[in-house]
Length: 339
Ligand code: ACO
Image 1 (cartoon, protein in one colour):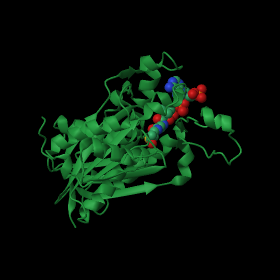
Image 2: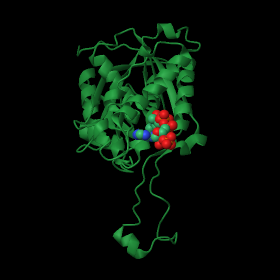
Image 3: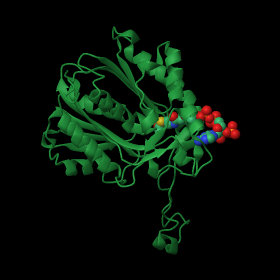
Image 4: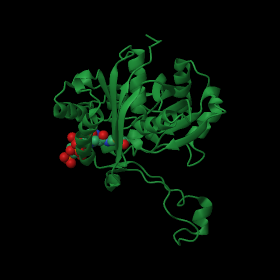
């Protein structure tokens, strides 16, 4: 079996910054509440780019970092819960825009655990030898499915994209675990088009024609306390499990790169693991929760700052709607070319 190395990373954040004070202009909240309860100070919101646009830009930067041409890619996997279209997939649109003519392309849906699922899926193809070079992307425009009148959710979610190039190598993914618990599905959800058609008896020809009732928009709904409890338990569990039987302990891990949801979740997880909270890389203060994009954005930022170097052990860990969760123990192999 081969292994899988991350040979390039890239990120794209929209320019438009929205502060907590900006949000307090239209919902009953405050900078103090949001900062203290979540750690978020500001976030980027897209006013021009959709999910594919941001995915393409993050991908271009990752390819450049990996010094790879798009035509060399065998596979593109995009993790998103906010695609531009039901179909074609975001990955197919990215493939066309990059000119990745040889690549098989498809999307996956695992919400905030999306990047971890994408790494695992693409990684399997590389480990078995079927493919050699893959591009994985987490790209989200959550602002289009946020209810901007709901203070429970609109203060949390934001937009962004992160990408990684994967290539066949000798080391990389040391261990991994993925998990799903569909019994918790309703705790964090956003429904799509309801079952409603000419034959269900609920839409008239007139409605069908005008489209006004036929097209229903839905928004993120969340039981924040339940998700908080889930996250605080599952993150430490994933971290410990991914270390099991590897011969490594938390002491050997340079940095844990978690899904960026809430600073209090990370503090509680650190406490459970009896580790310093600085072991977690945190950038949620600037970007909020960008779902499947948060981990690759963090990895790219860390690489750029020279915070991760060849030989370092990292754990990436996420949780999210589904419910889903997962983690990978990685040996970083990429020399930073951008210090
Ligand atoms: N501003 C002011 N007050 C608020 C706000 C706000 N933005 N939001 C909620 N409140 C109020 C509530 O209405 C409540 O008031 P009440 O006591 O009068 O009813 C009070 O604050 C406390 O509410 P809680 O829900 O108990 O607040 P909590 O401390 O749990 O923080 C939060 C809420 C931040 C949502 C937290 O539960 C959390 O982070 N949960 C996890 C959410 C998450 O990470 N989701 C993403 C998962 S990843 C994915 O897949 C997308």
